[in-house]
Image (cartoon, rainbow, N blue to C red; front, side, top):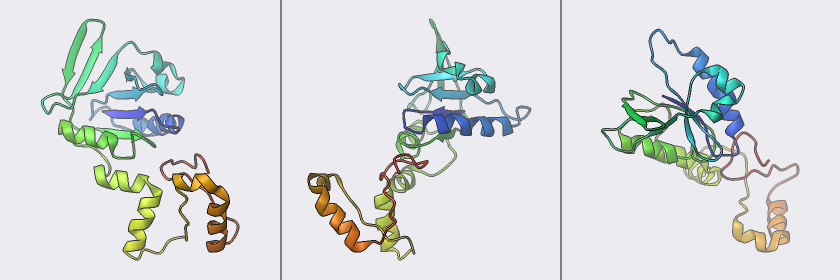
Length: 185
């Protein structure tokens, strides 16, 4: 199963990425199921790559969800019909929240379905740039200097800016801690 889309700000990036990946799958060797997650969180079985390219996949009448039950797999349903499709491996092509942050990896682990990519902790830690920097700093990995600005700092942004300006030289980059693909920079 190849899962893409998702509820994050990076939904569109995921839809572009999955086309490249799906086109590279050898369909003579693998039985690929494309599962798109809409921005609203609906899970859809996608008929083909063309449906991803033109966006029509979002109107698919067939849902396809991953059961957290270890005897489940991919549950495909349409109208009153439902079937369970055993799933050998999942290739998540989800970017951002609910895709790279350990959330969906936790679902795969609950379902006992192997998947491509990092595990729950590595995904969660790497998605949060502030905590990644703390970990990297702790183990002496060379990195760009940073000054964290957290939600409590929003009460007095002048003080936060003074702290940033005292520790860094311009230009500086401001990036959300848990977004990717340069969203919010």
